[in-house]
Length: 190
Image 1 (tube, rainbow, N blue to C red):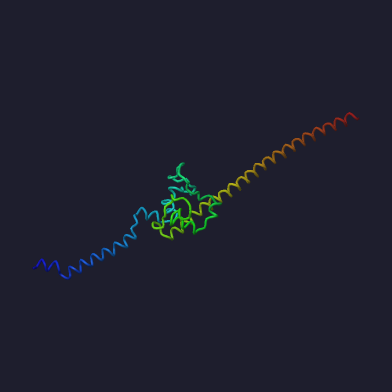
Image 2 (tube, rainbow, N blue to C red):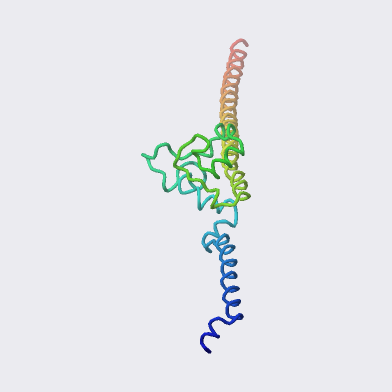
């Protein structure tokens, strides 16, 4: 009787019920927030998230030359530094491509959907980070063109100085020769 009473005690049944319901309630949110410390580190910034999830194929600088990039990979990973291509893509297309996979925007089926792995806010931040690659590439091209013009100006300035120096030397030599000839003619005519 004592054992039977202990097994079916109301407090015991309620305690077991609360423990089960409590553990289910704790497990559901815990599972939703279950992110390993390693993944937490990669979700700290959009750049870190991009480097963890995207750079294996697209490369750390977005040039499409990541560690998983191989010569025989068809199609090749997208080069995010291509400013002309990136101008044609809207932010919504890029968000959809990351969230639902590139196949959802009629591109390669090799890029997986990250929408259930990466929060929507972070995906939007990653779009800005991805856009920075083409902006940076465009700025680098402008800087290279400016440097080429400056080098050309320096080179043409040097060439110009050398030409003028040559003209001056020749002019002085010719003038000196002409003066010497006039003096000679002046002595002969006396």
